[in-house]
Amino acid sequence: MSLPWLVADIGGTNARFGLVTRPGGQPEAVAVLDVSQHLGLADAVAAYLADHAGGVRPGAACLAIAGPVDNDRYRLTNAGWSGSVEKLGIPRTVLLNDFEALAISLPHLAGDDLLPLGGPPPTAGLTKAVLGPGTGLGVAGLVPVREGWQPVPGEGGHVAVPTVTDLEMEIVRALRADGLPYVDAEHLLSGTGLPRLHRGLALVRGVAPEARTAAQITSSDEPLCAETVEVFLALLGGFAGGVALTLGARGGVYLGGGVLPRLVSRIPGSAFRARFETTAPALTEYAAAIATVLIIAEQPALTGAAAWLAQRNPHVELV
Image (cartoon, rainbow, N blue to C red; front, top):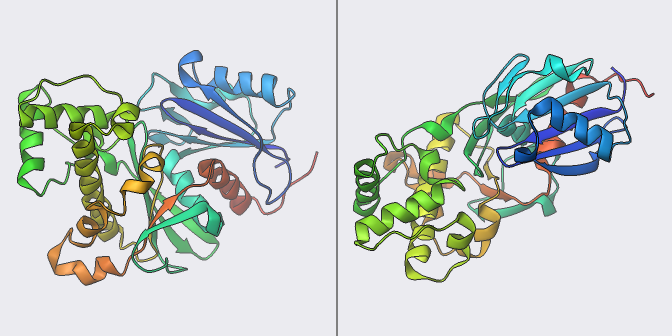
């Protein structure tokens, strides 16, 4: 397999691309393309290679997709792209779920790529979990194996939202009455979910709902927006705790996605960590011993895609 390698992180909003030009190297020539401006994956790849990579022909590719993948086929959950990577014309192309790639990046992130959110430091060499609200809500695990690390992809964002308090249950009931029969975690714990959570809270409080974007909600001091963020972080803590217990993620729970970096200053005073530790009252000590960490690296999924290719292909050719 010859270099360079193409790596990509394809989300519902943005498609990030980069090139790996040397074994073990970090992605270079990184560019971000608007998903809505391209007809599909092949069109976006061609545009990146032509406009940002000098027309180079990659010897291999690892593409992280925000949605389910099945061998060479993919479906972008929050956009209209689907199909087979055979159309790309790249000799060897691997598809990963985007949080699969994010999981693989974890052992390769430096200290300044991470921000502790509670608990002890992460324990090396043990199973890890990664989750995060972006356009959707991604979840994956990372298990140590003989040749390195094995990611465990999943669609955990579509489990039922983990309500605990009366207010949270009332919000879910209000949204069901408003036309959403099943409220999963992603419906509330994502960039698209924050406005829905804001609407549900407004219905419970008897306030006329006003359309707000996630960015408006997270940046506003208006009481209903502030309370929306409080509920969001509490629910996210409970959800993260459930993921930790499901995977036995004693090596730490890492959080990514595009929403949480806007809320860094509000997490310490929120119910996030308390809800994480009390997800299952009988296992509070178990959960309390698990680190929660925010990923603040700029392009971690690209790092993960590059690491996956390097781990699976220790012998490469330079061209």
